[in-house]
Image 1 (cartoon, rainbow, N blue to C red):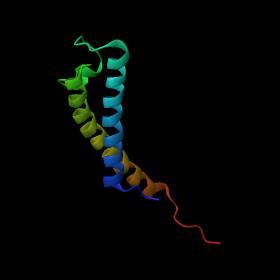
Image 2 (image 1 turned 90 degrees about the vertical axis):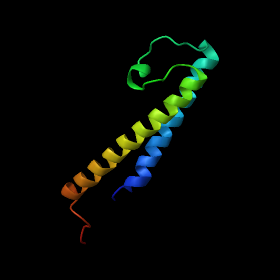
Image 3 (image 1 turned 180 degrees about the vertical axis):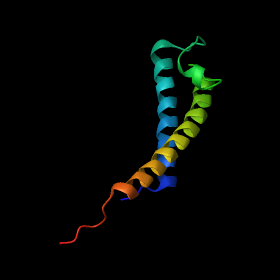
Length: 90
């Protein structure tokens, strides 16, 4: 069964974006805001563990997940066509 490229890419983008947004607010709730360096602000320009940074991270992560999901679904569909023998005859 092939993956719907647009639907899979959109789902990955939403999950990754909302996940990063919620994770940022989780950290803010328990540890407070911080402008200090972290791993993700090296990848996503403008991201920080702040309320504004969570929105910036949401946008970056959405597009990152969108592209990653599209590449994964395309590659999956290409490999499925090569290795799937088709319906079995009985």
